[in-house]
Length: 180
Image (cartoon, rainbow, N blue to C red; front, side, top):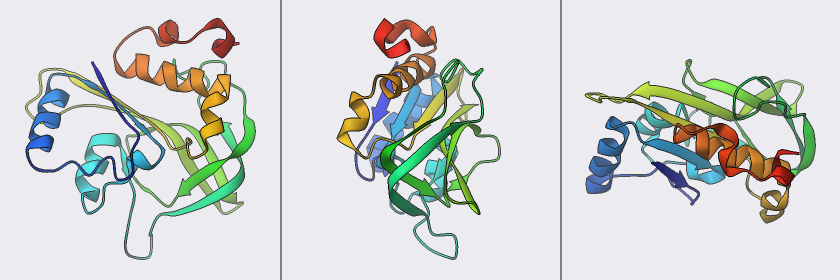
């Protein structure tokens, strides 16, 4: 029901793999993309169309990153993925200057400076061309640091994102400890 992508250049899906992936989206399959899985090599426009935002490799708006102490600031705490979540700071990596689709629903942001506030968590829902059912995508740019996955509240966000993308009840995969 859900494909989870967490690999360098994870959205660089080409050839027969792309044919199968688009078939999956047409039937309403879910997508969760974590950290540098959002990178798509030279497949920028296609990746943006699939996941609601994409890494840019060239031009004035080349995507940038910052690794260190960063904050996650939740702009939507009513969405099933982020319901009741509070802002927090931690050591991870943020990306900024991505090319975002205007209809991506930003759930959380971070900042590199007071002039650079960037989406870090978002959802994207659409029906793929010729599809019979809408698919759901959830993107989480955090995930650079291994210890981030040891953080119960971040695991809850990811597990909620997987459940939501699979059109399940958002809390169905998370434990009581993670949801606390």
